[in-house]
Amino acid sequence: MKNMIFFLFVFVFLTNCQNILNVKEKDNKNAVISSLFILSLSNLNTGYNWDLPATFPIPKVPANNPMSNAKVELGKFLFYDKGLSQNETQSCGSCHLQEFAFTDRKPFGIGSTGDIHPRNSQNLANVAYNNRLTWANDKMTLLEIQARVPMFGENPIELGLTNEDYLDRLRTNSKYKELFANAFGGGVENITEQNVRFALASFQRSLLSGKSKVDKYLNYGNNSALSASELRGLSIYNGEVAECFHCHGGFNYTSSINHSGTVFEEVSYMSNGILSDAEYNSLPDNKKGLYEVTSLSTDIGKFKPPSLRNIALTYPYMHDGSFTCTTANLTDIDGCSTEALGKVIDHYMTGGKAHSNKDGQILAFNLSPQEKLDLINFLKALTDDEFISNPKISDPFQ
Image (cartoon, rainbow, N blue to C red):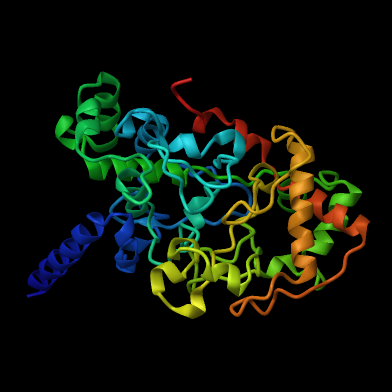
């Protein structure tokens, strides 16, 4: 009887899962993910060594896709392979560049056919800890599922896959035959769409960033890692005037987090007053945040607060790239991030625009010019230089 119940459960799950896996971008709102498959695998990781930064907890991974070195290696090749787009012009790495902490320094992502994404390309550092993966879809909880959006999404088109030509390319490539065999065993029969997604998810979970100057000061005992200005900025960040830590707290500097040992789900979507009611009313639904998924007017303008790790590299800021530099050269990281971060702080100091759903924590406050500069310097000290140059996660085709 127990076996019958188990197989019935598996059948029901797989049926629902298949429906989930068939969704296109326009159907993402219906992608319901079963939390029953989210288990801590601290003891089931097939010998995988996370090499976690100090104080980082072990990430949770799906029980049906445990981490392995072979899957991470395969996922790295797939992540950077332009053959994973229908017209072979773009890879995942085209919009998530390591040098920019896996963003693309554009206001909006641009797909392989020129389609413009309604939102900014997100930073993939520590994505293993994100309990929600996109700016404004509270159903998107698994990397294994989310991968189908850039692969097969139609609105907007990203990689633009429409058939199995990409699998045929992989099946005739001797390098991929070896990589898939190492990761999943067997022969070309295991070069499947599911295994492509599983390997991509494994590689993305390996993108760990936790060795910035701030980490070295807070977690590695290096008392001289931060300058006097950066230390003052740390106090402002965690103080009750600017209150940055309320929305960007914890080891990953965000309010949405998930890892082994998590007792309850930490998820938040907020309107930060970046646009007014009138401005949101003029936008299409796919630019209105969580509203696109829930159709609730109370969710208009609500987006997930992103992690601030490596923020000096990830401008332009906000989901729509609102804040960038105008006077500095875009390649002048120090000058451009200083200018753009200054605009972000100015926005919060004003208390944001009038918006019905604006979070109650968005209140006007004052900082002196020196305090503002100190806060900027602290944020820039969240850059992890080792992360953006680590050859283990670099493009293997270069």
